[in-house]
Image 1: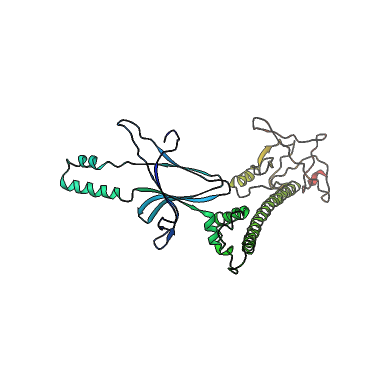
Image 2: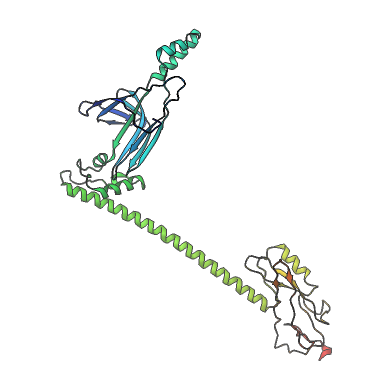
Length: 364
């Protein structure tokens, strides 16, 4: 009921010795026969007009280290049970199933309701009511798992009563890993003692868990190896990027991180006629340009000097065998996102020629 109190019923108990054998279908070609005590319950649900009907729930609980299969359906015939839903309840589980009950009208109420209908409609209503009255007996079937395991493993009745750990291992193999029962079934001498049969089953279960644990450890090792390879690959990529950057500065030109971008190529072409240098940013960022004011007298013809280089007049001659690398241009980003022009070091009004430049003939 709504208050959660148990419902008082009228019951009839048939012992397993006097109850007949029943069956339920697993498929179109497979039927399972079962025997056991039959408990038939009767309940009268009374309610007055305008009163809200009570809701009913089916509650199933299992004790610790116990398990059973709960099937809910209807009694289709005197010896046929048709299950609609089934679940396993084990290890102190509690299943609460709400029951949606639709009461059928009595014969007198049904006759009064169809009295005003045509003969064809009355025949249809009677056929529909007959179909409703068929197989409307609600049934619940409880199947204990431990006796079925003993029969499946070729063990004598009661062999698994005190084998708690073996029961837990078997349930885990069958439910979680879907292990075939033939791999753990006793297949020795049927006249062997109980201890020999139990030890054989325990040995089979232990071998199954060894294989499962080995597979689990292999998967863990594979995941660790994949993670380590990913970390090493990232470290190696970072070293390669730093190496390319260093080579770019020593050579007097910057190596672009994303050379496939057309914008970088356009910027390089525009920088040929101006004294500009590209400063590399952090990993994955776009290279940024810092404008640098040319020194006095540094403008020369484009044909006399290669692109992205400056020539200084009135500078001391430098032998071609001792090249002097040009210092990198330092850029700093302010908080508002702008660029601060880099300052170029000058000494006594003279600028140092860059690498690969030759002094003019009139300056010697």
